[in-house]
Length: 91
Image (cartoon, rainbow, N blue to C red; front, side, top):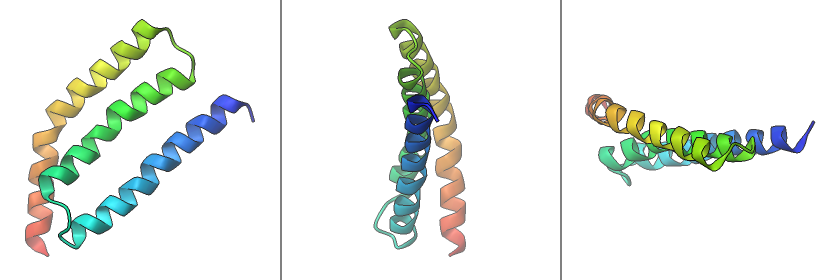
């Protein structure tokens, strides 16, 4: 395995592991729906920017990929908040 593959695997593993921790806090009521939604959609820019950096893209490409991911996350945020509110209302 080359170092890029290891770094990408660690990035994805880290994003999954932190989500499990956050979900536990959200389910116990220690984290609000809005905070949880922000952390969920915030993974997209981290993943896009991390991927671009790890694969040694040019700075303009890193910025563009991250900026597009931030825009997509902003569009998805209201939907994720609504979904979390519906799910938390069922508990």
